[in-house]
Image (cartoon, rainbow, N blue to C red; front, side):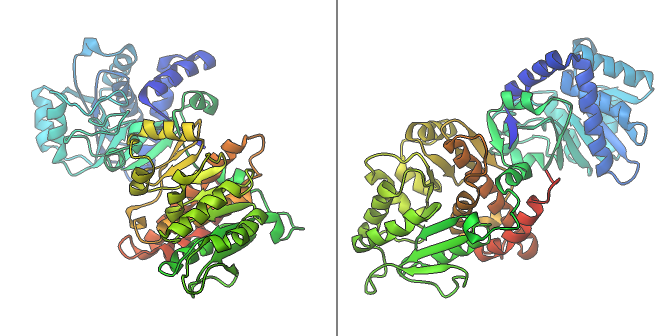
Length: 512
């Protein structure tokens, strides 16, 4: 998994890297500028007119360094803000080198700069004014400079963080630099992932500036899944193997009014690598894939689960490597009691996904399960924990209760007792009926298939890895569906269709 750092964590990582690697801040700036310049060069298909906006701090230093590097190919103009004598040492050194190269450089308050900003056309605007230490509170003269460039028709690229975006919280000033691309040094920062961050950052390019992953991980506050995680979870299949080697998933779901939810869950699971899917339901939708084992459990007259079936259901759950409860189960009190019975009696070593209607059983439990993933959206979580409303409180909830919490918001949060991950792919088209059922099926399949593949990890770490990977795969399938059907027309069934190509792409060895 990839580390996500707060601005303060990134500063600590920078200092640690300079000490451990025995390099100076000037050298680190040079590495960052070179990596970022390479991204700009790749984004531009021909020599272009580039306006570089530089501040006095080290973000401005990155901008000056990039300006002199890009000047070998492109026509570069620099507008710098502030007082020359107040620049950081590294920034002033790079600014002086730009001046020695006779690059076009203007102080923002100068007559030349004002004429330039109102009349000169540019192909690219590079924002290196403040960087990750910035806030969503903007003051003059920064605000005026941002207002001046807003009317220009140009590709906008932010260096490490758009000016006007809070690098910690993701709050953005109304006049924030609206980047088409953001080049983030070493890793993503928290503000890029929250609130307005994704909107104002555009496409984020994380560049390697030579800081080892071990240092970034030391100061990480959050994580995000990647292809490398998926390749660790999905170990290559042995030639001499059978369906029993890839896990058995039991799904207890469905009711008379919502048989489709169980079908979506089961169909998604069988497409996500698991060997066997056993669907226990009181009624079956016609769309259930033929590969699914269908076990009828329930009263024909009622068509939902009652206590009469709970022993039979427990027997099926006990045979499984992982269990999913709840998709389309309905709100009948008898069904809720069945889910509570199963949660208290399924073997403690079996991981369980508690989704949708099964979440109603959580308050009935006499004790919390340790190997349990709960997957509420905001409304379900308010019923489950009405006093919990913030990110930090959700972290504390997971730690106190011992659950792995998959909080379905934007971004999706995955909390374990020790760590928190955010999922950063996916799209608004996934806000459609049945999408949560698909996620539950993918998650159950990954638990059954991959549970034992995380070597050297604790049981909770395995749960965290599998749930993070499942959300990542589901979101990738949603992105595939959006690219083929459009966000307005895609359905949960289209997400299932996208699981196979998405998983294939992730598991291409060497694609990390």
